[in-house]
Image (cartoon, rainbow, N blue to C red; front, top):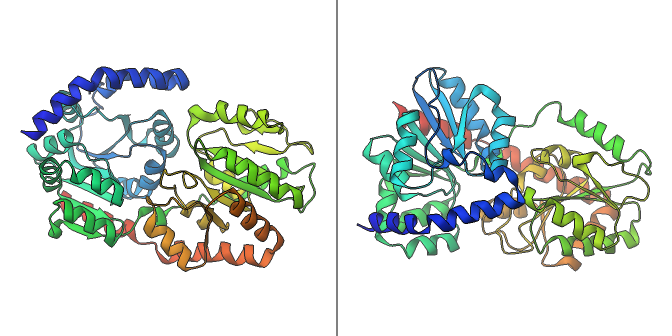
Length: 426
């Protein structure tokens, strides 16, 4: 009954959802394309064969899912991997990582007709949903068709749990139709169980983010890129990467950078906004402050007059981190909940974050306990930590190595999640 009410409300809100899509298309034209896929209309993949459906909503989840997708491709060569996303940037990332080795479309809206059209076309034998994409109609449709569904790399913040708790029976019914939940941490698992997920169908496997793979050619590519950027700069020049930044953060980062520049004039800032539709806005913000900026997307020259580099490309964050010396991870000076702290840590960079880390509580605590993470509360503290790291090469190296050790010691989620996938397939 509650799901029927949810569906009715979803249909009522559909005009607003489409208007929002049009608004996003105004900023990012790719949102204006492939609307048919969002309603389950697309050509079925050929030839007809068994499939495994993996849903990763956007870029971060797509990157995190890559090791699992690759392992499933190797283990089940007679199955087609179908990967869905909700965003154009996620779509681009699927194509960049997997090419033609997978079938990719946008996930359907959570409407019964759209979901059923989608399932009829791909006929999955297993559905894997990354992190916390809980859609009642999609989950119910899989349950009705007896398609096992694994919610993997699952995380649930206290704030999200409170939101789902308000939905009461709808949330409980939805969770009880999920075959298994592979949670990132004990706290995540406990929140799912409190909301109604059976304890016997819940396991803590850790996060796939620790199992990230680094392209062997990355170091050489980064060295070449760094040589181009620093061609006119002293050999001692340091690059500070501020990545996955959001509105309200760039101003604070730019202010902190100007403070750093008072003591380290040769330092360069590499600013990487989280969303492509904000690239031009951030560029305008930088120039409005009288700073000289080189855009990565147009390969602008980095001269002695350049203050910072704008990382306005998608899918290059590991390369940009690898070409840097110190990292700051955004979504944390504003209450977004933070982003992936492990990518720069895996590359041996000192990692700095703001205080808003509720999406990565467990990962942040692990890094902090290993002295591999600095948490700052404002732009003044951010500038202080950066200056401290620039002044103390030993501290910078020790912190970076501690982060690498944390990543290596916590690998293993991939093996556990692959075993769970196999048990649901058999």
